[in-house]
Structures are given as structure tokens and as C-alpha cells.
Length: 380
Image (cartoon, rainbow, N blue to C red; front, side, top):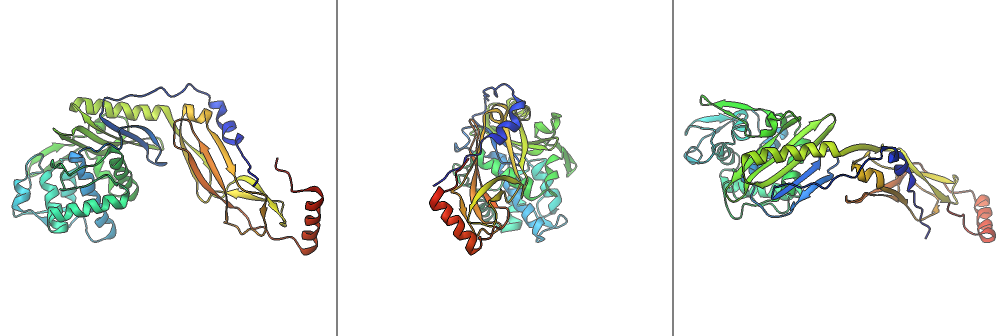
């Protein structure tokens, strides 16, 4: 087996960016995670897989299921749902719906997102699934589908229940899916006020008023969970998602979420490494009508890197070679491995960027004789 390492490319590309190491970061949140939305890179985490209570951050899933129905055409913003006595009597934060009335989907979304209305979530759950219990089962099923494997819902609002649990990592998965899957509806999360039943309420998300490019998403608070927040902000062409929980005050929630986002924008950058179809390296070919075959990626590769990572990372192309002909374009034949200090190793499959045919019989014979006389081709 012949292995070929291709290490210098990215190191050389970023060496001129030399900068001090990313400083260690701490937060007073009990659980926290910060991710880059476009690459999914985890920039910071603390107890990200610890089981916690989602409180009103639950409403992200309630709204996600509304957005799904809007996107597939089974629901429209002008459709209305009936208000039951159960919804009207619901405690906690309220939209102040009136029993025996009907409320539009657009107003219910704003009542949930802006006003955090527990009553509005019950209207939605009963209207879309027949009961809150049935809707909660649908929420849990969707969580598993999205990869939120530690999440279990028992209601649509986040009302305290010992079996109504999640993790901040799972909440970040939900936030990213919402942003990526429903760009036409995501702007609901940036609205700062909404009036219903002549009662004006402001969005409880402190990030929306911080001037850091925040445009979502949802706060939460219960005695058991403390103060939490799922937030997102965009600066330039970069978007970050932060999830925190377990803070002891509204003020701490506001300051910590903003501080974590600002740190992420300052200490990390996303780089376009290779475009789909761009040659990453040339692999040697055995008995082919070409001596090498280009190795390419099937899709664009972006990496989010800290200053320390971009200085010290290594990139390798590994394959067993020389690769015998014939080779069909698009065949997986190598691996691209990128190792970054204190960050998850990235591995991608490299494909043949062109087809390579076999040599003719006489050429094949000559190469075979050369192999017997001189041995296999050396690998530089």
C-alpha cells in the first residue's frame, strides 16, 4: 500500500495570517453552545449534551411544525384556528386569545414568537393535531428526524414537566434547521413587537436590541431551568447561533448571550478552501492513458477556523496508489483529511475529476516489462 500525504497547501495558504492563539473562554451559563451556521462547526461548548429543560424555547419546535405546513402548502398564513377554553385558560405568558374566537396563523406565529404566548401554542396544537398531547408526539418525532436525539416533548409551550427535556446541542440543531429550511418565514423571529386584543407586547429577546446583527430567536425561563436563550446573529456573510441555559437572571442571559456571540465573530472566520470540481491534488495512475488523475471534491468546502487552528492545521490527501486504470470520472478514490487543534477533524471523499482509460496492449506490455525491470513507480 502506498500512501501519499499532501500537507503543505493549507498551511502555506494561511501562514501569513499568523496571530495569537484563541484565548480560553468561559461563561456563567450552566449549558452553552456556539456554532457557525453555514459550516455547522462548534466554536464553543459547555455541558452541551447535559439534559436540561427547554422552557419557552420549546416554542421553536411548535413554530417549526407550522413553518413545515406553510412550506408544503397544507396551511396558509390567512388560515384561522379556533380558540378552546383550555387555550384561553392557559397560564404563564399569554397572547390573550379569546375563547370561541378564531385567530389567523400569521397572528398565532407572532403571538408565539414575539409574545411567547402559551395560549397561542395550545390553539396551534389543537388546531393542527387535535390535541396538545398528539401535537407533542409529533414534536418529539420531528426532533428525532432532525437528529435531536436527547429531546422529548410533552407539551407545545414548554410548561414544566419532568419528562419535557432537551440539550443545548439539540436546540442548536433545531435553530439551524429553522434558519436553513424556512428562510421565507424566519423573519418572524426578528419582529420586536406585536399587538393583539389591543395589548401591545415586546419581544423578550434582548439580542434584538443589542445592535450586533441579531435577528432571532427565542428566550425561555422556568424555576427549574433558569434563564435561557436561543439566539442568532449575522455579520457580513457570517451567521452564528448561540444557545445558553441555566442563567440566574434576565440580565445575565442578555449579557452572556451577547458576549458569546461577539467573541465568536471576533475569534473565528470562515474560509472557502476548495470549490466543487476544483483540483485538490493529482493522483498517480497505473497503466493508464494518462499518468495522473485530478482529485476533486463533489461540493464546495468551507471551514470555520480559530486563529490558532488556521495557523497550526494540517491537510492530507490519502489514497492507495498508483491507482489502476481504467478510472471513471466521479469515482471515489481518495480522502481529504483536515486536522485542526482543539477542533473536530474534517474528512471528505475525493473523486476522480476525469476519466482515465487503459493503455493499449503494446503500451501495457511495455509498462509491465518496465515494472519487472525497474520496479513500481516511486511516490514523491
